[in-house]
Image 1 (cartoon, protein in one colour):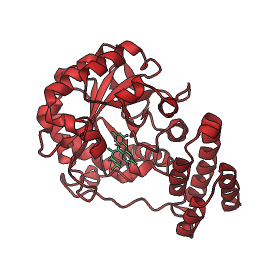
Image 2 (image 1 turned 90 degrees about the vertical axis):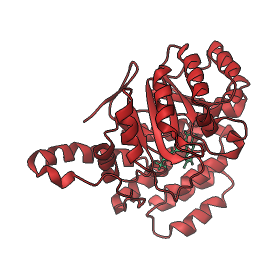
Image 3 (image 1 turned 120 degrees about the vertical axis):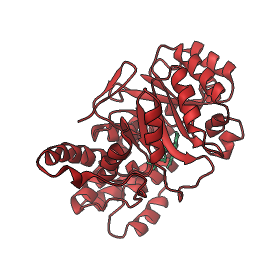
Amino acid sequence: MKTIKIGNLKLANPLILAPMVDVTDLPYRLLCRRAGASLAFTEMLYIDAILHENKKTKNLMKTNKEDKPIGLQITGNSEEEFEKFVKSGKWKDFELIDLNCGCPSLRITGNEAGSYLLRNPEKISRMIKILKKTGKPVTAKIRLGFRKNNVVEVAREIEKAGADALTLHPRLAIDGRDVPAEWSWIKKVKDEIKIPVIGNGDVFSKEDVERMFKETGCDGVMIARGAIGDPLIFERILNYLGNSTRRRRVNDKTRFASDINKKTSIDREELSVEDVKKNLKMFKEYVKLEKKFFGDEGDFGRVKYVGGKFLRGFKGAGNKREELMSFMTIEEIDKFINTLIS
Ligand SMILES: Cc1cc2nc3c(=O)[nH]c(=O)nc-3n(C[C@H](O)[C@H](O)[C@H](O)COP(=O)(O)O)c2cc1C
């Protein structure tokens, strides 16, 4: 199995859980780690929110010993605030700091942060240099560009600034999810720079992971939507990659060759009855962890949204999700899961 080194951080395997707003809090990250994800991130936090930390931000920054290694993902527009952040020491609990240069949301780009930063590679470079003063590994998560593709220029600047790795989600900021992620750009960037390149976008199955490695030569694969409501995707991929390495040794190598630029599959893997049952148990554990870490301060809306995703493959999932949305307390959700499991 390939490993990946980001600065001084050696990961156990190359499968990484993506940062996701409203999903990747401490409980969710723990489930994915237990299933094998080797690195996880907080959801994107605006630097301003970290500096003026309120209860919600504190909860989003919550981590623990099992939640290792953990990356803090930030964005912002002001180098002055980045300097303040470095001085604040609020990054001390994290092994890595990731600069978000990919968020397309108007709320963020309207503030000249997230993917808007791609318009100004020199600014990204200055921000990375400031973050490097923490002494922690620093990475950046980028797209192909804001409106036009300038990914090679941005990637070179990021490397030159001293970043330890880069994640590429190969779509423009203006592209919707119906535009396929162009993996060929992951290969182009990989060929241009020496720091590790993590590929991201449209990975929904073990076969997708295998194909992304093969077609792009990337060092790691980051999974977002494929892991929502299905943390066990990491376990299935790791089992498969272990076995496929063995298979490849005995079988004809060309069996695994696939065309570069082939359209990526956005089909989710069909889950077996066993997998669906396992995910219901994960749902139960998720609710337990949300209660344990956040108690009454938890984000109930999030639990219902993420919880509904665990029902994929369950017979009558649509109706069950509607029922789930009607609940007013976490105890009701608990009872609901127990009836589904029994
Ligand atoms: C619900 C949701 C929340 C997201 N939040 C973030 C975020 O906080 N930071 C970030 O860099 N990307 C965020 N993304 C983008 C993903 O990390 C990822 O780049 C994108 O979804 C493509 O990967 P996928 O095809 O595996 O979903 C988010 C995506 C989703 C679906």
